[in-house]
Amino acid sequence: MQLVAHVSPQRSVIHHKVVTVIILPFMKFPESVTIISDEISQELDVVAAFVREMGFPGIELRSAFGRAFKDLTPSDISQIQARAQSENWKVFGCSTPVFKCPLSDRTAIAQHREECKRALDVANTLQSKLLRVFTFLRDSARDDSSWPQRVVKELLKLGELAAGSGIRIGVENESSCLMATADETLAVMQSLPASLFGVIWDPCNVIYVPEARLPETNDVTRLFSRLFHVHVKDAVRRGQSGFAMPVGVGEAGWRGELAELRRLGYQGMLSLETHWRLEAIKESELHLPAGYSFSRGGEIASRVCARNLQSLLALEAAATASH
Image 1 (cartoon, rainbow, N blue to C red):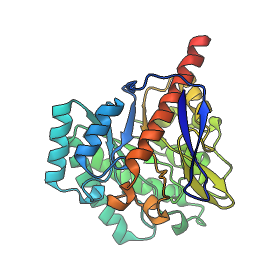
Image 2 (image 1 turned 60 degrees about the vertical axis):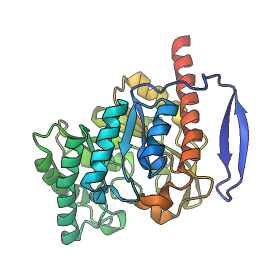
Image 3 (image 1 turned 135 degrees about the vertical axis):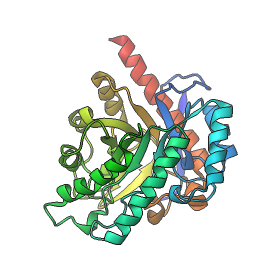
Image 4 (image 1 turned 135 degrees about the horizontal axis):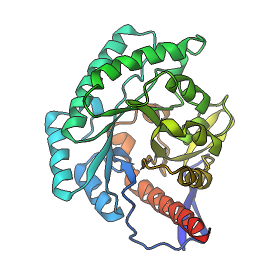
């Protein structure tokens, strides 16, 4: 039997409920499942040990050594590269904060383009074929009906930087950014070349958009032709706010999501992005996750969520086998 941790969104008290899922205690994850590094720890030794213990084939890199992705040093990157090579795991994606800035701030946009150039070099060094970017802060241009075209114009400039590199640009839907819901994602992606740009879909992020309906399985169906990568986390909405929860316990609908991804023949990665902690993370740290304070408590929370994800995958495998 597998225990699923449940935390009230109002307080940091942990309860448990038993679900009837039988899994091997050290079941390896399939090659299609990874985890974002700083959801475990800022320390490479801890991340590497967790990857070995849980059977992940590698990581998605975000912050490390107390530094945001954009501030990682050449020495940091060399250490990560050497560890990945020596332990035979991969860096499946580079999660940059590029274009988490106002659409009207030309200085910030120019700075973020420079950060993208360096991120492409980092991705190339780490043999990572996916670079995550965003679509500008939601309150910066939401009232301008032309915002999708303006976002596309700036993303295409990143495409020029990435052209010929073999690295694809994954555009994530994010509650704090202009492209948050499935409809908004389609509005942006329809004008971007599919060979270079695709969606990093996170259904949980929709929960944090108070004016949006809760995520539905049909969202991923509509986005499937442009899907590069999927982030896995969970939350509940209470009033106008979202509260992080262990994977499978919230309102993201992962049972239906995983079943639909299987039905559609999805061949990309699932990437665990825990976000939940026994002690809630500050909203500012959820917006720009990086550093030791963000990762505090991440190892135990990610172990819970990894086991929950294993249970969900086992349920889906059993359902598939029964048909």
